[in-house]
Amino acid sequence: MEKQVNRKPPHVVVSCGAVNGAAWVDDRVIGDEVVEVHSIKFDRSYKDKNDGQWKHTEVFYTEDLPKLAMVATEWYRRLRLRSYGDKHHDNDVSSNTDDLS
Image (tube, rainbow, N blue to C red):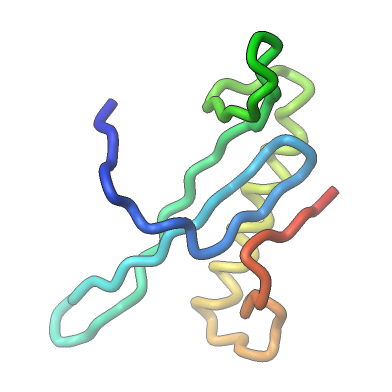
């Protein structure tokens, strides 16, 4: 897996318990038009038993799967509604993190 260096912080993070979905927005030129392209990364936060520091993993336990599904569904809902031009919906997030739990 390639590590990304000097990556900007995510645009928005949606969380449900320890499960997070972070979104980045990039502008791409398609034809003559500049469009926003979103990428979503899912992870799970946990506190390391040895050093007490919060860390992240891309490995999920069985009991995390409903939370992962909720976060993924929320991102799909926000991006789908946005792509259909629903500007009045609350997909224009003012905070950087939204907690679904």
